[in-house]
Length: 176
Image 1: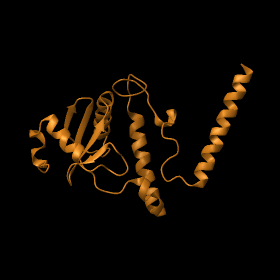
Image 2 (image 1 turned 120 degrees about the vertical axis):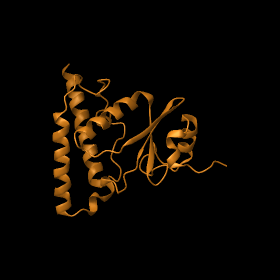
Image 3 (image 1 turned 180 degrees about the vertical axis):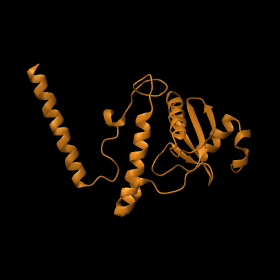
Image 4 (image 1 turned 90 degrees about the horizontal axis):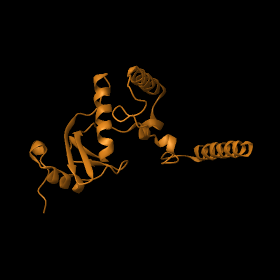
């Protein structure tokens, strides 16, 4: 039987021990790559090629005054990288959005506007990732399709947009 995870021992654990605790921990319902280590800590799984960019983006956002979780430890195990960080309690926006009143919606909109303004002030010698310059977007690649909890109206709009894209692509192919 595995002994309980000791938050105070985080720095003392080897990468192998920590990876074992992480993989035995409960996963987040909304993201299979997030693990709950304790009431104060989570761990996120990253592909080795993604971790440096994620850490740099978090560092830059934090330097610009955007609240971010603090990274406590990075552990590597075989083909996996786990980043242990402070847990931020609360409900995610995609869950609570439908229950927000107009005042809170405006308040969150202004916070988002501030974050976007800060993000736009960041300059980089590359066009994509702050580290590699690579540009990856699930919107561009449409890896995930429709967002979770999409209703009939969103599905109809999605199909309409796909149809328009198909017609546009086929008419361009015909002209070429």
